[in-house]
Image (cartoon, rainbow, N blue to C red; front, top):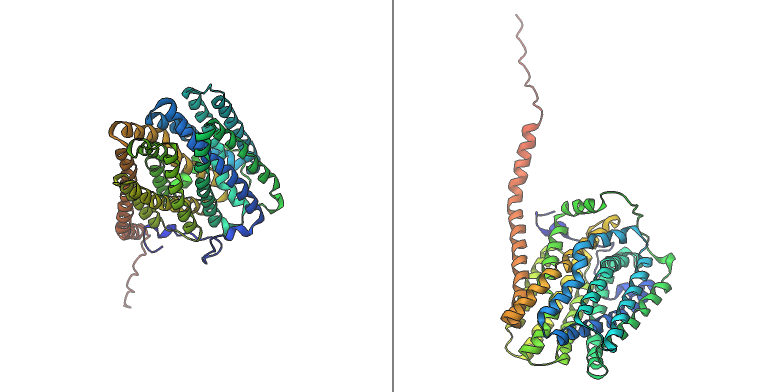
Length: 445
């Protein structure tokens, strides 16, 4: 370790050479898993657009969209680490079979309510809360299951490719959703999402168990959550990363709130324009995820700089004078956002031991999305009160300030490190046992 800054956070997989962008696709199980997830992700984006627009149609309020987001992520705030603990203790493929089935059933129920004309915003809130409870277990399990699907040298690349596919489906999902909303109605977007969960279920069944990388067995024991917190506290580079993604997730990633308002109030468009915003954001996101996929190591200082750039890009989007400039800023915003997310996610997973990976990723996701119940309504209120541009600017300024704060703390630690080390050496020398000085030999009489 050269200094007390992020050099400790240099990560490497089993290979230190630069991998190909699509290296993890050599693994059969991962190809099957990724194919199933790509279909489900398309349905997820279709539902995301439809859900945001449905709430806006029912309430005509950006704050209501924020409340819906908050309810989706409130369970993660309260129970996030418990979901990670479940992922550590039980077979992850079996967990995912259950969670994907529940997601499909919930979407089917919302589709029936919407298509039959019985949907109310209160029902949407209940759906968001129920989906959030499933998310508590599903998300950390999916995060760490990648470590079983591919060998260790490919984990970082697999995480980045998974993020790239998720964002690529963002190009298709909003477009299909916009067509369905404009032709047959919002409810059919929910129905299509429900059907899409068949793909990951089939994929999970086709995965070869013999080719999975088995993690160490974690037996039930008292104090497992506290031990995971102590584990993170003893590794500052992990803690700083979780703090950064927590601030970004809470205040920076409120796109459903600010982009619906920008489409409706600022640029006077409709659901199609909102869908276009998501498509453009996804174009940058795919590029960012592919950039991250080719890396085999990341420093904490890189993540700090990228968090600053993320905030700057969102402020630039908020101040964009015209639609063309705004779309360009969204491309840059999407690129740095996904590169940062993929690098932070794979870094934390690479830094921690397999026995605690589920709980640490539960904490990671708790920080990343668990703050949405606080940030979503707050940004919704700012957007409704002061306008969409103000809300989006705050979404960028808060992560910028947090990143600067982390950079200052790391710099101060680096400056003080030699002084602290010197004090420790002096203290150790002072506590060392004294060696008696030899006495002079008496002269002969």
